[in-house]
Length: 384
Image (cartoon, rainbow, N blue to C red; front, side, top):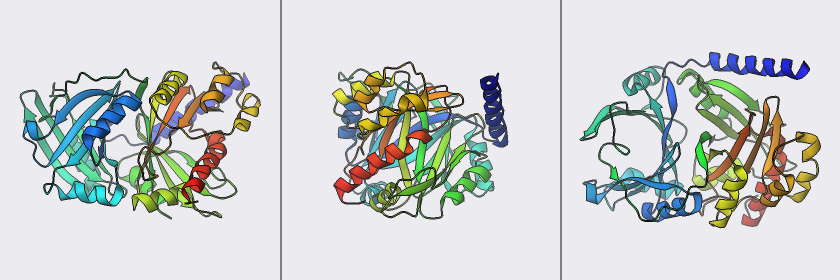
């Protein structure tokens, strides 16, 4: 009865949090994530080979697009757009690349009404990225609008109910003879933003007041710290729980935290990592390792206490230890997670692979081991 009562209390708590989120947009899910990269063709080959994405759509010189080239990749419900500017044609993208390196520019959100989404957010204080515009081709029309968020990151609202093409108007189907098999990635679980000192509450308030999100979980420097570094985080969620944005800021520590390192190398706030869900994390991680993806090393001693801390799980602990997959439990179940090393030369953007077995939390019990692994990498880079 006690566990049932705990489950009911948690369910009630989550329901209350979701009810506190004013879903006036509303958001139906993540439509796509667009990264500005130095060489989209080569980056597309990497994401296909290493992470199992498939060819979906293309726009560039051959389609009449003169200022940039974009390759669109897909894996289940995840759409990733890789965009590179053409010489002398698109200063915004060139300047973004020069300042930040390869990184996330657009977190696009799927909506029923892109005009209303823009009107609702801008009247609540959002800075417009671009006003609603309709884009059309022989496959129908899409309405998009955009607002600014932390750093140079933007949200674009996408209304596509009257479109039947591969991606967006102006894109053509990208047919390729090279399509490695998927790695089992299903959808975006959450996306993490790193902001500067004292800015976490500013952006948590932005998502609350401008976009109607609620605060799902708060972590302070007592929750997320080691002997050397610390950070604070607030996880913001929309009303249906499909969009979750943890917002991290540095906290005082003896040495430089991963958030400070990110901001130094990215030269400002930005998207730190994309957490992607899988139904079989052992398969996903083993496949990605075969394809050259490097993951953070978790000390073997971490697994000495997993059994007593987490309890019974379906997976073999020896397999999890072999791959460095971490486990944590909350009142609703448990989760398994692992983090790649940065996917770019700058120690900035990385991916998290996560499998939820009922748990709705974010791996609080793994924070110390994770941070120690990150600190070891920082020490190797000389940035700790």
